[in-house]
Each structure stands twice: as structure tokens, then as C-alpha cells.
Length: 599
Image (tube, rainbow, N blue to C red; front, side):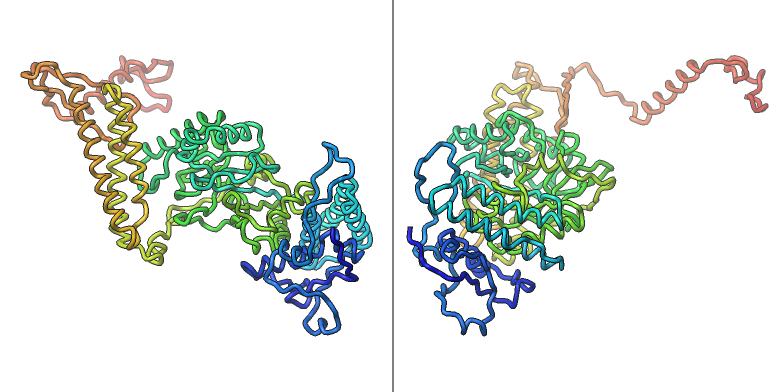
């Protein structure tokens, strides 16, 4: 390994000191800033300079230094390539199965943890008591052992260095942060790395994607199910389909949640305990519904572009719905794990949450395989120490959650989506009329699905209609967004095709319903009448065929109400016991009530 000789390691920062560290940087600038801080922590550089000093310099101070400058923006890997340094470890002299996997990035992760601790100390105005000499000694010993291919000794020294940083952090916050990592999955974004990973993860997996994996990638679905049953990963429960819930009545809404829960248990072998999804809106009717279905928690997060969530005062809360029932919910604004700016002031965010709620919950959301160097450093730190928190599943978070005696209640207006404004900005055509068309077709699809439920006991091929409804639903999903100018022709073609599919399904259901009351004689006129309300799924149906001899009762409904009330009062009077001193109905007027008045 090439070992360049350096006398001192310096980092030039765009600030006067760490007190005004530029936490406002975004994008490539934030990534370059973290890379400039962590790149000098390469074990070869540490061993050459025999120091871990990270001294911020002002532009005026640069004139007195003769240095090899690397111009940003750049990544840590690019900086090491320019310095002809390798991140791969040297081969051990006597490899054993127990040899830990240690790379130069683990030393860079130590530098990132040291930076976060320094920022936290200065932001809180605490006195600095970290033993810098001991930290330097341990880090240099680890670097020397790493270069000499003694990974076990290097890991022990790194562990001792992390223990020093953890002891310093515990002076301010003796509480470990809970890191909730959310993988957003769909058919186009399957897990990109080895599954399950070395840390705890939470999966936002739509059921249509899971059913697609069941057919095309059964080995991946089996791996997810095994990891979920072992507690290494948690698949969050969801509804069967993503429907406009604010436009649905109670029965079809509850059916979506019941179907989703049953499908989840069929695919993964266990009932879901936490509800969460990326698409779809939230509403106040969810807490009592989720409670009744057996969920213990939910995600109260704005993960989709069409989702609006009211701002919460804490990272977790008791979400109270329309009634008095509450459900534990995670409300911390998710951080983009693929953006470096999410990790510039991570420790400061953790400290602020602990100050306000005595606990910290950090949600890190990203697509599989999309992350940044800082997030990889956080993962490496969590393998050795809980300095910046530990990765947990949602169940583990709710197991240790502080439960207040009250809940936070929000109204429907708090969840009103901003879709119209967003579609207008995106230049989509006819956002209002296209939404009306989608809602109309969605209502027709729901009506046909519940009509199929009503007719299924008498239909010889109910499964055929169900498959046609699934196909129509996939076609309907293509109309959920108003079209752009380039999508208008395909959008109109999809609408025409869907309308034809719904007409065909309606014809099949009409024939099946007519066959329910057929007498078998084409000459005999059918006299049975059935009134179906397709938007409600009744639990029991009873059909009675009426003959020509039957006739409708001419008495109005109020007559039956009065008749029932009279019968009930007569029955009540006969059931009233006659006790000593009480009124006797058979001897009215002969006795007095206890108060002395006549009955």
C-alpha cells in the first residue's frame, strides 16, 4: 500500500469555527463538506501524520501553509483516488473465519461521529471534556494495526475510541436515539442489496408488488417473509388497493383494510402490527379502524406527493381519531437517506428531540440502493457503537415508547391534499375534469365489486368476474393522475378501454342476478324483486320468491310502528311485579304510592 508522508492533516471549512458550521448547505456542497472532513481519517494518512487534528482554517491562514490541496466538490472515494489511497484492507497474514471485516471507511465513520459530537457540544454550550490525547492514541493504534493486517486489534482500538465518544455524549444525553429506516419498494425498485441486511429495516411494500413477486420472484418474497418472521425486517401493513379513501363510505373502506390484512398474513405468514404506506391519504377515521383490526401503531408521515399531514409537536404521539380511541404513531419528518444534507446536523436534531420529549426518533426513508456516504458511515457506526443511535423496527420502537395520557386529534381539513396546486405546477391537463372522470369510474368499479359480492352465492362463475375486476382496477390505476400533453392520447384510450370493461362486467352481473330468480319456465313472468345497494356489503342476504297469490300489505309503515309500541306496552304492564307499597295494576285506585299519591 502506498503510504504518502504528511506532517499534518488540515481541513479548510467555509466558516470561522465549528460554532458556525454551515448546516445550511445542500446537495453536492453538503456531500463535499462531509467528504473533506472524513477523507483525512484514512488509516494511511493518520499513520503518516501521527495525528487526528482537524483544524478549520480561514482563507487568510492558508497563505502560511504549504499543502497538497484537493478542490471540492468531490467525494471521499474520489479524494482517496487522487491521493492514491485504497479503501480495501490489506490481506491478513493468517486469515481466519472470525476475522472482522474492517475497511478504511470505518475510520472515516469514526471521523464523522467525532464531528457530530463536536457540533453537539458547541451547540449546547457545554464544556469540552473529551480526552483528545487518549482518542488520538487509540485511533493511531487502530490505524497501525489496520496497516499491519491485524484487523482484530484494530477493531478493539476503534471500539475503545467509540467508547470515549459515547461517554462524552452521555454527559449530555444518556439516551440512545431510535433510527427507523424505511425502504420504499415497488415493482421497479426491488431490494438492491443482500437481503436481509445487517441492520433492522422497515419495508413499505404495496400488496400489488408483493403479489407480483409471488409470481415472478418467489425466492425474494420468501426471503422477506423469513426476515419478517425472524424480526430482522418488518413489512408494514397496508390496504388491499390504493383508493381515494376520503370519497368512500365506511363499508368499502373497511373491506379494503380487512382484505389487506388477510393478504398480508397469506403472503408473509404473520398478521401486520404497524400500518404504513407510501401512497394514499390519511384521515381521522383511521385510528379507531386500525385499533379494531389489531394494529398497535401507524406511520403518520407525508411519504407521498399527494399526502398532506398536519405538523406534530413531537416525533411520536398518540393519534386520536373521531372517537376517544388513540393509536401510537410515528410523526417525525422523514429524512432523505440519499441526501448528504440530512446528516450534516444529525446529532443536533437528536439532541433537540431529547430536550423536548426525552426521546429521539429519526426516520430515514429511501429507495433501495440509493444512499450517500454519510448514511453508510452511520450504518458503520451503529455496528460498533450506539453513539448516534441504533436501527430498530417499528415494533421495537413502540415497545419502548413513552405513552402520554392524552392524544392529538386532527380534523379532516388537516389532511386536505394539495393535489390541484401540484398538478397545475406540473402542467397537467384538465386536473378537475380528469379527477371527476377518475372518481366516477372508481365509484362504478366499487359498485360492481360489491354487486359481485351480493350475487356471488348464486353465480356459477364468481371467480371470473373477480379476475375481470382486478384487471379493470389495474387499468383504472393508469387514470389516477391527470395527463400531461404527451400522455393525453394514451389517457383517453385507457379511459375508453376501461369503460368498455366496466360495461361488460355490468352485463355479466346483470345476467347472473337475473338467473338468481329464474323459474326455469321462459313463459312464466318473474315476480321477484331485489333492491341492491352496491356500496354497502351486507353480511347476510335473504331472498324470498313471491308468487302471484302474494299481495303487498296495504297498511302504511306507521301502522306497524304503532302496533309494535302498543304490544310492547301491554307486555311491559303484564311483566311489572306487584310489591308491597307499590301500585297494583289489578287494584287501580285502592292503594297509594309510597309518596301518598294515588296510582
